[in-house]
Image (cartoon, rainbow, N blue to C red; front, side, top):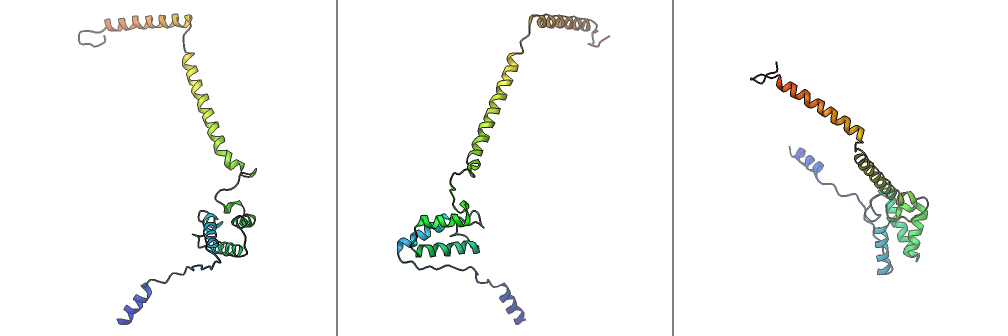
Length: 169
């Protein structure tokens, strides 16, 4: 019984975390600050919504390592960003530049808003035109009056045919 309890305790005991922690040594506090800023502003291509500082993906680890190496070589933050864009594309930045290939992403929503608003205005104008054009000309008014008079006489005849109980004869 003691062996079973010991085995169960070993199986259910919390396992140590397998995540690795990157430790980098910097030549200056400014270099460390630049590394932290770059790690927070570069996006992991695999994780898509995580920056490379928050991602545990192998690709993000490689990007952190390359960022560290480039900073150790004396490259500026912009040089590191340019290197990452050249290697992974504009996706690694959270603010991609406006280019011919990304123009539809920037102007697409604006285009759909303008088209939708235009359609809405055109349809509302059409419905108001229909209401204003529904006035009757003199022939139609005379015919309407005749129909109403005819309906009135039929109603009078129907009411005269009812008896005292309100039933139609």
